[in-house]
Image 1 (cartoon, rainbow, N blue to C red):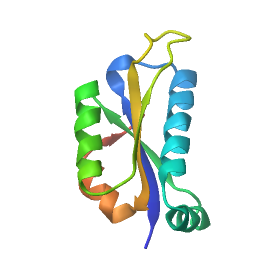
Image 2 (image 1 turned 90 degrees about the vertical axis):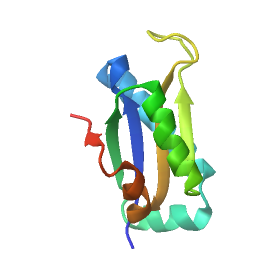
Image 3 (image 1 turned 30 degrees about the horizontal axis):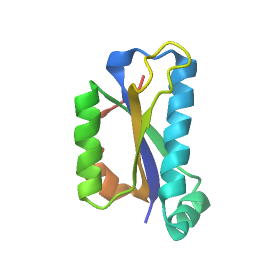
Length: 115
């Protein structure tokens, strides 16, 4: 059984590469800290696979996050502090998992990779 984590990033914000990297890192760490020790251990042993996917808007991000929560998956939603170029409280991304790849793919399998 393969484990992974998916990070959903809002495309409408047109984040710089550096800002996106920071927000994705926040989401990954927060979701990992919320996850069970046994799940994190299995995920780490497999190389901590992470996939970044694009969502069109804040509404779409919250829709997928809610689907994941409804399935019992760990979710971390990140809002920016507003110290740089975003308004304070702007929702930027959400991490789902780590969890079984098949469970995450049921929810996010049709989303596109960030290019």
